[in-house]
Structure formats: structure tokens, C-alpha cells
Length: 239
Image 1 (cartoon, one colour):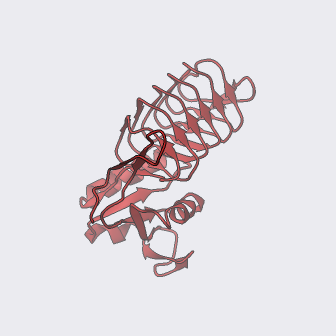
Image 2 (image 1 turned 90 degrees about the vertical axis):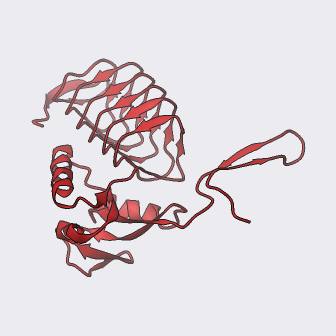
């Protein structure tokens, strides 16, 4: 018997139980991982047993073509994509401006490359989210609530809690163990460090860096670097 991708199973004795299963049918889709650094290798490891995606290789301008990394081949640098029609997960995360420029170059020279939304299957993610192009939820244990708007190429790592009605601007990076309250606004090209807490309703401007463990209780101006509990401005991001 062949099932569609969306399956509802009712009735297990006693009270009725509703179960939703993602991706129960069809073959896995091939995807290449751009960047064989830590973020890329963790992504590839997390999706090793994915029911949706099969990692076919790394694209990395700093690695030797044919090198095997954790059982996955390096296909080459960005030149490999010139003649390929393929899906790519962009795992360049530390510098949003570098990622933006790299993607711009790929779109100009490699028109058959696509950047799908890739969501880790071991995270709890609402179906009621507007995702931009190329967004990635890389690792397990994220809880992402309802009615978010997420810009293009946002990257979310592991064990984050993101509340309802949050807005995240394009090319922003959220690392690990972050708690984002409801109705928060995070600008474009921001980097939110591990363990940060952003209180409900806070507005964070573009190109802001929030240091690891910071507790953000009030709005942050564009281009600022904030650290501490409560978070205070410590400089400019020079983005």
C-alpha cells in the first residue's frame, strides 16, 4: 500500500489519538552541503538518517576534490556547481555578509542550483510558518512555535526555543540553546550567540551581534554588539 506524504492515523483504543507523520512516502531528495566546516559536518551527520534528504557530497572551496570527510566526498569548490542541477544547503554561518555575497555569485553563475528549506526532522516545528528561501534548521531539539516569518537563508542550529509571532530577518544566524520570546523582531544579518535570551517584544536591528549568554531585555539598535545580563552595548559589528 502506498501512502501520501501526509498521514493521519486515528484510534489506538480508548480515547482517539491523532498522529501526524512527515514524509512517509517517496524517495529521498539529493542535497549537497556547501561548507565542510563544523556547521556543514554537523548538518550532514544530523541528516544521515533523514527520511527526506540524502547528502550526496560537500562543496567547499578550501578542501581537496575527492577528499572523504566522515564518509562523504568533497565534490569540489563552487565551480562544481556550474554544470549541476542540484539542491544545496548553505552551511556558511559565521559571517552573514560573506554568505550573502557567496549566494549572489552562485545565483548569477549557477542558475540551475536551488536552495530549498531544510528542516531537521527531530525538531518540533509548527506548520504555520512563512519560510524564506534556503532556510535551514540544522540539528535536533528545536521548538519553533506558530506564525513566524523567517527571511531568506536564516540558519538555526540546535536546542533553540522560538516563540510565537517572531520575525527573523534574512541571512541571520541563531546558534544553540537560545530562548526567543513571543513577538520578538530580529533584523537581517544578525548573529545570536549560544545561550542568549531575548525577552518578548524586543526589537533587534539589522547586523546586530548578541553575545553568548546575553539577556536582551530592551530594543537594540542596528549594528550594535551587545553582551551580558542584562545585555549592554559593547561596540559595533562593522557589518
